[in-house]
Length: 178
Length: 414
Image (cartoon, rainbow over all chains, first blue to last red):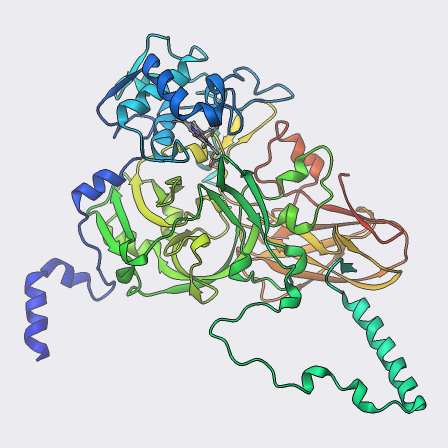
């Protein structure tokens, strides 16, 4: 009973059979569609940014319809986080940390809005809508011009005011034993 | 030293003495002994139950819920462990602190998937049933939110309980599959140096974690204190990185992507980074520092009269085991080493205890933890000097409690 089964498995999966003794190897190759839908992480270089583009004007309209009730006019905040202003305040007695004053990368803004906002309906925005919202929010402090249109190429190139404002303490301390 | 609702040992002793006096009076006055027979010994009790719950007399032992945006987003915020109402080191699962960024998802484990992809030889997808077939490991570990105790950074010390201040800290036994085992099955590409872990909640919360350490210490936790994870702790699967920032112990874990560098997610740039006075923010300060807090006595408790008490509290460090906890009753003039109730485990809370004979005069109580790597808890002044105003992450400064001559306890900054 047992013998033929073992032989069949060994024949069908010669590579896995070699390591099967040590760990179970139960994982399967993921469905490519699932992988595409789930892989929404956008690093600073912008790899993985989806096709599409959005302008400041389009973003302003989406913001008025879907964001202003929680983030205030032009991102001034209340009841939820303030998103704009505060540039130059980080060394003051009252630092104001906003997307404009604090965030080092524009790609983080795309990544976060797409995955988490609006908080009442996350993952409901299309890629062009997210580009447009990024363009609008960044235009309020003049980080991009009012005429800006953002897409996979231009978004990673946006220079955030606080780009140099972080030190990666993990990288600088990982040589230490603690 | 009793909480308002919880009678402490002194009150009990007092009642006991009153009871003895009463018994004496009963004998002499000829009252029948039956009056002193406890009612519970005279009536059959309740039958068995399928899942036990705390005594109804302990109904005040609850998490301290703080909604950050009560109307705009009720599921975003935290609830704290009522440390001041507990003892020992293991937190009951239902009292483990919560920090959610858009509520608790309702996940059917049979539909949940874990994806491992990116810089791997072969991307893999697992069902929870498959993960449950893997060899398991268990360990006791604390989880502490990086924002814990941050309210003590405010210029005016908050006059709230130890739980309300320090309760974004809990400790459990976690059981699951070693992350390294699955990473090795996927085959780590030589370019991979970080991994992004992501939850399947309505924040799709994601964090970047150095890969070598994740492979070494990470656990894909399926069980907490012996039972499957509670929904608010990530059911059916959470990442456990013992001693690391609570936020990166990703709940409802559904995706791990191996990368060459960090993704710079919102929760590792905008949040969970520490702005210094020079305007430069420390990013990826990932391990929780050595810390301790005296819990008995603390704000909300009263030390009723001069006499004997036990001071006790919790100490923990993300860097390893606690080596010692020193306690002062006089604001740092003299320190005494407290007894640590074993076992003292790495990246786990440990209970410290010290007898105290209170003379009834105002006393300034502090505890100072040192871990096995030599990290010592800083004073508040030293910690605040390294922070820009209003920056609250990784607050592990020494807590000062002032016991007043009337027995009330105040939170003070010294």
